[in-house]
Amino acid sequence: MSKYKVCVYAISKNESQFVDRWMDAVGEADLVVVVDTGSTDDTVEKLRARGALVFEEKIQPWRFDEARNRSMDHVPEDVDICVCNDIDEVFAPGWREKLEQAWKPQYTRARYWYAWAPAEVGKPVKRFPTEKMHRRHGFRWVHPVHEVLEYSGTDPEESVFIDDLFLDHLPDPHKSRGQYLPLLELSAQENPDDDRTMFWLGREYIFYGKNDDGIRTLEHHLTMPSAVWPEERSASMRFIARAYRAKQEPGEAERWLLRAAAECPGIREPWLELAQLGYDRSDWNTSFYAACRGIAITQSTNSYLVEPAAWGYLLYDLGAIAAYQLGLYATAAEFATNACVLDPENERLTNNLRIITEKCREVGGLAQA
Image 1 (cartoon, helix red, strand yellow):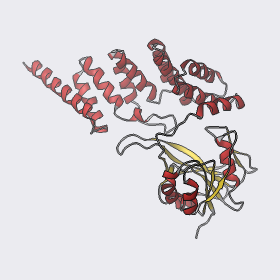
Image 2 (cartoon, helix red, strand yellow):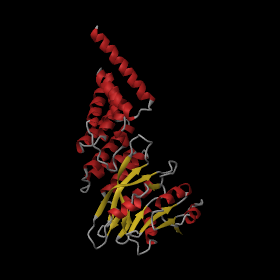
Image 3 (cartoon, one colour):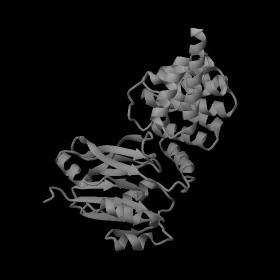
Image 4 (tube, one colour):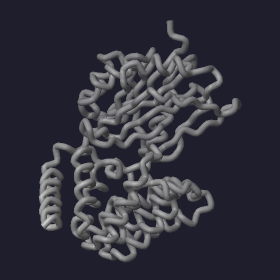
């Protein structure tokens, strides 16, 4: 018999292709509540046929926090644990049992692992903790986009991390994210002192090629008194460097990447981008040095800022190429071998290893002669 009453709540719009997969996953809950915000396909009909309670509502003007709060408002008052879940996300089977085993009445929310658009088998995955499981009362969603749960209950905040509970984000790659930028601009207007909102806005500007706006916004982020998390500050510097690369100013890009590496020494991402910048400029010393520094970091922080590419083959690949160009053939062979281990189906990496191996034999033969 279940110890707690669990409800999954969600928002939807034209998610027909994901309904069956999603309902299969969330069916472990006692009930499923969805607010549909204007589907023109058969999402609503399919959800109802699978047993979800669906409410059709218009959110004008559109905001993600308002939509999620409308959905939460339909969750019955006697529910113990609410699980906010998007219809393109999939829990691993058995999630309900793991949640109930970990949960205690004093907890206000639970944290668990979230995989963003999992890659192919054997490829690195962007995985970080998230926390969208919470008590029924005392919570509201805030911010128009990149919304977060804000707690206002009378009990002290206390959360539990469920290390073996996993949620995969499996989105439609063709779905537009065009609404994100104006909503982030609105969020920054409403929350001018929120450093994370400012970081997300600057990052989004650069995503859209608005490089000067991105540089200005991220430089402002770095001056904010609340912007104290070294990894996020380093990410701001990395994105500023990307903007300068796009503006064809590699010297400024290099300066910001070195600042990013110094700001948070325990992450690979600045070193990867510096190794790539050195490669693009045929600056083999810089590329080799940066690749070696990145490879020397062996523990991921598992934050949302981790770039999967930094933990794949690319640092070894760039290091191998730079070492080869510098005449360090044995090191090049070692790095190229490691790159192939991390991506054995990559034909280019295999060919590079073959070329480097032949060069090592040639040089070895000349040395013996």
